[in-house]
Length: 306
Image (tube, rainbow, N blue to C red):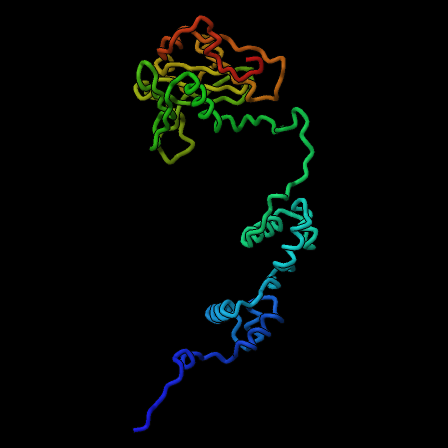
């Protein structure tokens, strides 16, 4: 019987309508993979077609550094510009693109994908003068968002472990003291009222859908302490039993519970900052903290001069 021979299996599976030489010419004449597909007479919007073209280009080790895609510059241009640049502004100028945030992100991202060394690129900046490092002014309306962090710092600096509740509770912080765990509710008042008083709300809204419902006092058994931060930096620490049944207070009426001062956090640096008043004996006894000879040690020492 006559012998039957079969050609290579790869040849029978190759259904390309173009050969390697045509692919080489298309890659050299194009600036994107879609353009290569169009040069070969293929459907440029097909992801499968693009994958096939890329696979054969990789097999032939074809150079695609001149590809730009939607960009107006190529990989080879980026590499060349990067060598002589001293900052990112030089890079974008060399590529002929507008120097803005969006273009910088794109160029930096492409440089990272190419593995280019960008360590020599530094944005030229004049050293800031004293007092110009950060000039953002204090915003009283942000006090309510910062107060919990201030309270955590105040307790932590006094050796008290501080924890945040995972689920919403009537207290904001759990503070471990020598007298056990204290449940702390943080309150703020950003500015004085029309009578020049620090009128602080110490109540809560009932858990109803109507946001216009009036406030009600906290259950004194559900809290141990109120940590109050005022817009002038004054810090008060008041036992919940003292404020039982109240929904608002004038802080001036509770001067014995004023324990510190964080005023330098709320203003620019000043060499004439005043030292805060000392901590009250009642507050020290309630927290069970180790007594010190100098009551100012319990002040919130963030003002200049220590």
